Image (cartoon, rainbow, N blue to C red):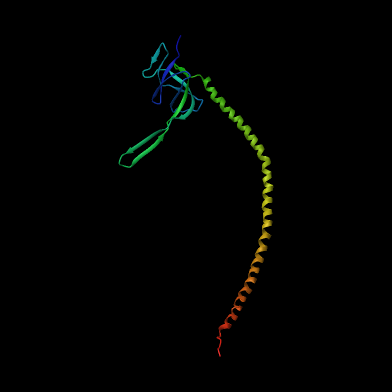
Length: 207
């Protein structure tokens, strides 16, 4: 019984031993989620009984993989310091990565089958139909609400202006007249009481 076929692929300056349905995380590659890409830099191909090693690559061999997601790795801290110079630099870095699932290992110049790229296109049709339904509901909800605030907005400021005008004129005329009339007689009565206090100034005469 022939064992499972494997391949050694080089991408992003690194080598990966892969088989069908393996999931690997490599340096960032261009492609959206669900898209099928081809890795053509294959260094070796084989199974448990026979292997083919390339010089440096195997001619006609390639690996088809589907993009699962575009992600980033864990943060690493880059810290530099020069002693007695007051020089310190701290930087963080997260490497951009691509998660792949190997779909086929191809030899003899074969191309990947297009049937495995179809699931990515089916998911794109669902949000479009749902978006049209939500837009139709929003347009129906806006029609009755547009007429109501137009009538209430004009009535409120008209009522406030009518109440404010008569209330401001009445207290302004009465208050200053009452204060001036009370202050005038209070100033004249005060000096009249001090005059009789000077009578007992004369001394008594003894016989």
